Image 1: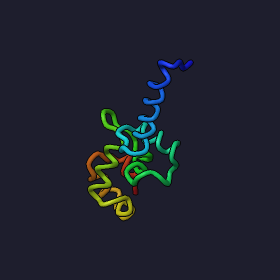
Image 2: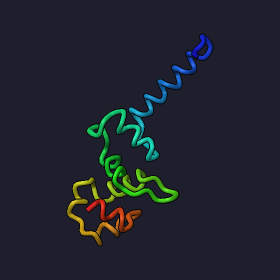
Image 3: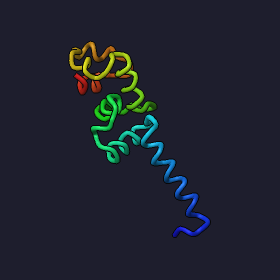
Length: 102
């Protein structure tokens, strides 16, 4: 239950959370899924969309790998023209991720 003392703190934390979801780049896979649910697929960046299909590796978030890949190839469209062996050469992309991308 919100009291007059806790209401401002609760509202401030909620406003900051909503602001962060709308303006900042996600840094974890969970944040990408949260943005997908909150804003819809049409409002996700290329890297965020790519991170949804990449397998998660231990110690590294899919969004970090996806951002590197999108930056290195210049978007997601060039990925369609890669062969499986070319996709495997991308940093952070193993056979599973390469197969999902091409």
